[in-house]
Amino acid sequence: MAEKKAFVLRINADTLKELQRWADDEFRSVNGQIEYLLQQAIQEKRNSKNKTKKSGTKS
Figure 1 (cartoon, rainbow, N blue to C red):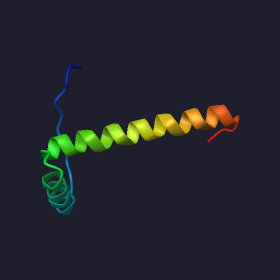
Figure 2: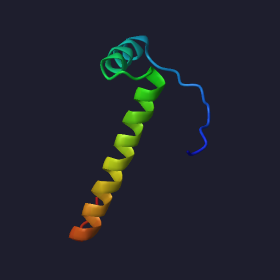
Figure 3: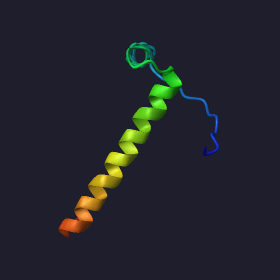
Figure 4: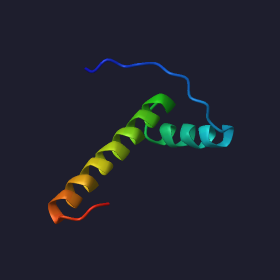
């Protein structure tokens, strides 16, 4: 497993409440939910870059 780094995140209280609800729905901690969402966003970005490279256009 990759080493994890701790850091402070300042977040709007309403956003945090919504993340907590979402995490609860998916049986994750808030930290786990944020990590999951970030990983999805990174993967989506990589996939869109790969599609752009294959099509020969720039984004």
